[in-house]
Image (tube, rainbow, N blue to C red; front, side, top):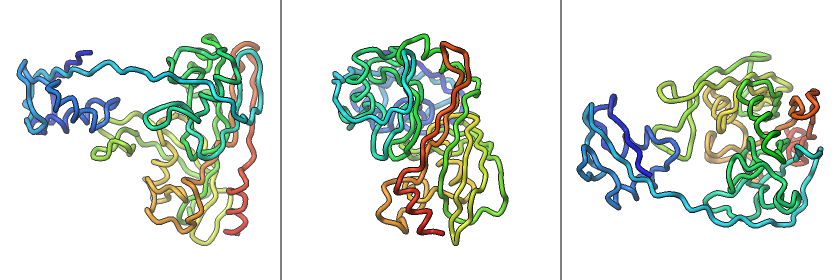
Length: 302
């Protein structure tokens, strides 16, 4: 697949850096491999990663077509909060990846859904993500909706796009938040130097809005409820870190050393999800109780 990019800004940047900034769907290592294989041309001449771009340069990027691995059904216990012919609401446990990706071809929620639903899953997001209309991070727990057919998928996707879905998360963050509530309205995009991370990115980010409310204050920590207005990757984690209150246990956006080493990732729980049902048109809402590790930590902090 050939992709063409005309340089209109950032003149003087190395071409590998320029491509990393403008091809958010490609990792830096992927871009380096394409360069190494001679897949990047500037003005019809093959270049190396050290080439510095000039305004008006026509960059041609030959991206090999991805070959999707075979995803197999796996029997596994699923905590189903609700199920009908159109949707499922799953209470996702900590440590479970939602859909297959590099390094995770089995043991994902999708593998379990393929076994449970016997092929009755929407296909809009392709063979790697059947039924998946949104996702939550591996170490985030709580409610996730799955669509069994394309009509339901389109209906839920439209609600996500217009921000009418109700999504409330619960988290414990570092530091004591003084105000009782607040809003973080800051665009999120790829981190400028670490392509595995997201960041507040005013230049290339997309609008992201998180509303938060303090539930309880502790010595050095705050228990909060967050309501998403938008749904960007790692949104709550990035936003809370950006205002100086990273989520406890989040070693990506918070302190590298966690004061509670037994924690597996961030203390973040998708507790409430409300939607308009794609068939009946009625408002339905589901909740997931705080997982045991979260409750015990709150008791320890109190």
